[in-house]
Image (tube, rainbow, N blue to C red; front, side, top):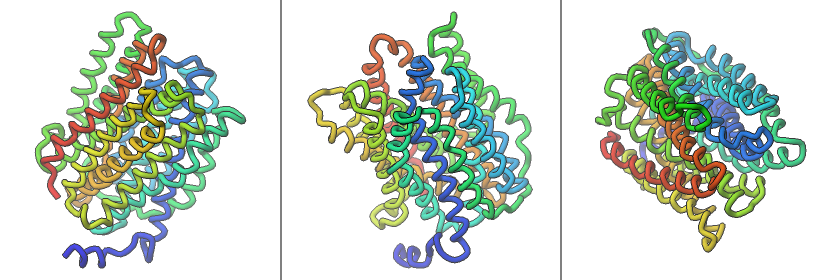
Length: 446
């Protein structure tokens, strides 16, 4: 039966789906290039703007803004269709990266990250709804594999190109060049299907989303330990995230029971583990192995390429046909790979082993993440794909932003005395979070 189903699914690159697939690919390419480039040049940004203590905040800021964007855009996309959200998201996204590229100091840089994070959140919901509206359910695993594959080209050239640009003309041009890629992406995605629905508006969600975003930033800023009473600020931020998060997500979203809650729990742990570890990959390579930024960029490239390979295997390899099973396998590989990368701090471990370990981590999240996206859309009622996509990505943002922000609390405490040691322990903690994903993954339904 599996062979018959695979034979009749068809290719998203052919026929009436071809142009939409090109648009989806190009938009994912934009996300990938920006994310990998920023991760590569952040050590230079922190050094020039004297903002090492704000290192983790710069990563948490777009996640916090994305929470608000996701809460606002989910019901709107269902009601108006994804087309308007794609246009708005691209404009805001580009405005944010320009602000970051022109920033005279770290607070303005973080502001730019907030703006571009809002645009990215709007784009994320719209893109998932395009997939839900344009493709039959049987084809969606291959489309999500396309999304992940879109990371390959920027993964091959993005980090290295970003590092070279930073060394030759300065890190600012890494950000200021992103709008060029955005224009090309928009020209290709402009004709994507956009079918309005009749979903209910999300009354009250916005104020709770704002509370969550403020909570994330409170944890991040308080974690820098430069304001009086910072422990209270961190505690208040965490409380806002927990209370607000329960209001912006579907009822029972954190129960971990079968269906969407199990998907959300698995995604939260897997995504947080990868995000929390990736923040410190270039930093550890520079501090522990004295590599250059271009060389550190190649390590991020390895992880991105294997991430794509994992998604392709999940969509096409019959041995991985069991969806819950491949999520569990992916979580395990992710945990092992992240823990293996932490050996970068052991002088006796060859650098090749460290790089290979990061590749294993990428393979694991590639298998799990695209599968969880398919499982989430399968739970959505007709006309409510936007709400489900919003819930999925809101949960990702909540978990990832809190994970990165809490990591920033620990890192800031040792940023002046032992930054490499703190970063190593944070990477090991991320590996443990990946293994914890096995708990909700046992309740997934294929």
